[in-house]
Image (cartoon, rainbow, N blue to C red; front, side):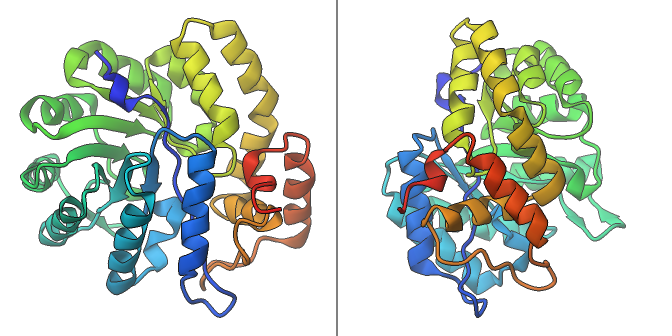
Length: 305
């Protein structure tokens, strides 16, 4: 049975950079404040949509401290601690606990295209990190190239006390969520939809109780989740169909750059810079995004004006 602590919308915070590539610490604080004003249920930091793969270890620690301290308990914080090295993932998790972070998110261990943890190695890594004593969300995403079969996920939920939540964003996510929820029962406390909400309504029908989108429009996504969980599926579906063109544009045309573009347009951050080798968003694509998002007027587009 899903836990009420793990429902609603828990978006990923982008990492703002200055035009010279330095981390914009004040911009990061403004991102956090904007997300709190979006009435999110939690905030995820240092995820793939935070460009975690472009951050040094020192920068990760700086951002972990800055974000958890600046949130200051206003909402729960999920900190991504994924690493191929179990020892490094464990140390990252220990820091989160020391700082009072509420949750961790982890992908299975992988490095590049060929070094992938086996099911047993994946289980052992999550079990080791679980010893830290912080709730863990398993991120089942295609980026790792690792298949996480439902029986393995259920075994982890049953045998590793801190593994409680599952963000499913693989192909045919709804079908996997449905089996996971039905067969995992009470051990699956937080079944989550991901990938910007591109499959959100199907995932809700399959049993998802939470969503992890980007920070672009969580104020528009959260009511869809809560209305569905509250029994108003038709209203939820209508709202989802209304914003689906924008979700699709973000997912298929922009990726994680969309949130930065919208937040810059809305005065949340001063720059939408992405570090090399990530290219700037193509100018016409950027204009198309801004024109489209103006039809919905989300909080991120007006917060800093």
